[in-house]
Length: 286
Image (tube, rainbow, N blue to C red; front, side):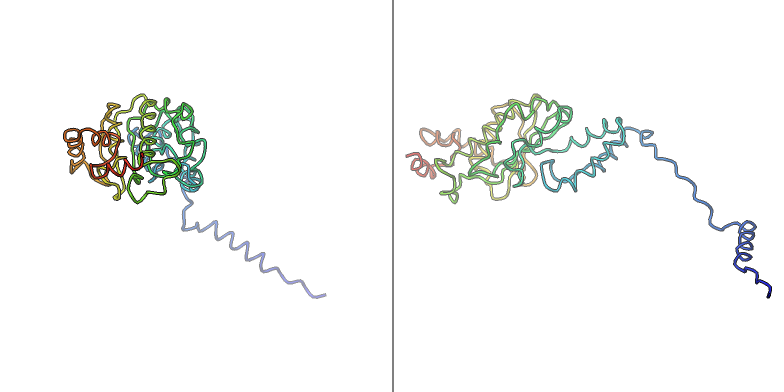
């Protein structure tokens, strides 16, 4: 019977193991990383980190893309109770839209503000109101009630009013709905602002801006400005139109107060333009 051959693989493996123990590997073993101690940083740096991690470009609102743009950021709140207590104040210091503008949530009964708990509402500093969407038939949910929770917004100091369009223009004739006049939507918007100004306890500034198609002396803009003045709040102009640099709105209102009289002045006080537009309004009221 022939002799059995030696298993060369076993001998090779033994030789390799001996060599590996004799000659160490060139690549050192990785040093275990220590966890980053966030709370060892000064508060100023921590706030800056929260701003970078939680910032979103658009105002907070009900939107179908929230699961992709907002939800991943909110995972930061789950790290610890202390981090949540510091970070949520930074997140909700961003502007929040009062009534949703996306079609999917346009007729919702509960806007985002009404869905937030009271301690999140207290962290809000800026509220945005869009005037124009749904102008022909505003949703029934767009009204100021205690259920919105505006009274809980104790940190709210600024309201941003953005006018997308003014339905009092002539090319909107025939599209305003049954029984609606040129002033119907203006008074609706004034009522919204009056309700907001009365509910928010510490409001100080109202910023007004508009799309380029909206005129500086549009009845809706003038109505908004008069309501701000009546509430005793400070008016500032937004950056898109830059009306604050020109100062023409103040001049227009002075002309209205000084030069108008009789029926023309009454029409102007209701938010209608100059004397050329008076026959148009009289015809509608008739």
